[in-house]
Image 1: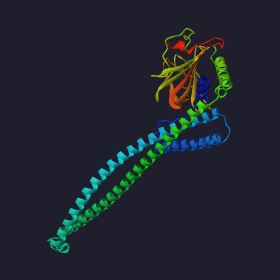
Image 2 (image 1 turned 90 degrees about the horizontal axis):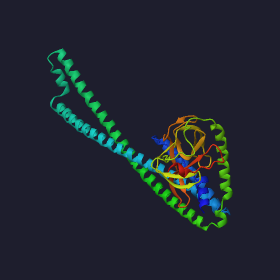
Image 3 (image 1 turned 90 degrees about the vertical axis):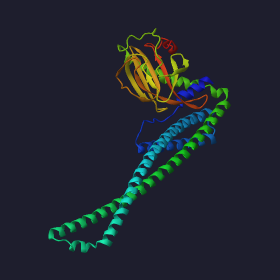
Image 4 (image 1 turned 120 degrees about the vertical axis):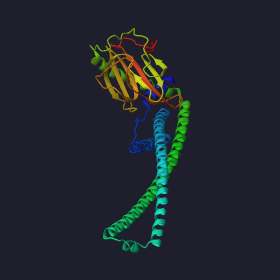
Length: 370
């Protein structure tokens, strides 16, 4: 059973990288892509349920779907926060515009009263003709024209302010509707994820002993890993960067900031952390290879310490480049999510491994951190 869970962990975890995107359009695009991918996986799940596919395939598909839904939930959470921020700004804007509008309305009302009073008590024509000189007549005409233009400009400002308030209130109402819709979709995704998690756990319990033995899959995974390390051993031969690392090196820090080891298996360690935890190099070395895993869309980083190699699998982002020299405990990337196959809960985890220059030399990851 433990082997089955490890294989699911290694080969079926799938999530989408959600970088910090401030742009609303980019966030909406991410959500659309996730929803499209989830819809595609739902068709695959329906096909597996209707057919005679093995329970293992069904669990693998469910694990991928749970990761995708978790990524979508995170994106929806970010969208709601963004919309709530927009709503706060819109509410402040409506308040400012309403205050300006109120002042303009009051001012225009006063101007109207004054204009009526002047018209009633001092006929404009009489006001002009009563001037004693030609210069005074010109000044009075200019004064009346200026007053008229001022009243017209205030009326135009009032009209614009009313339109601005109307538009901003419409925008505010739209944002509130979007928040309500996003929350509704978020609740739906959470309910779906709970259903899929329960189905996966039930399916695992129903598996036969034979289905739980997946040694062939394990062997295939180990074969691919050993092939990759074999090639890296050739590349790291003669490397002197981080050459103080030896078989007896001890007391190193766990390569996940604030993380803890949940399982050792020979030269490998499963290390859990929290969201956005930094993944660090265990020792000074040279970045030999950065690859993107085709199975789970995550990054794997390989660092040579002298001729020893440490590998860090399941990173959501990488902050170093191939060929770069890194210091001991330097950040090389960020932890990514995986589905815990025993609970079907989403957690943040990396798979760490240490490899000696010779494949015949036995390394134990547990020795490094003692």
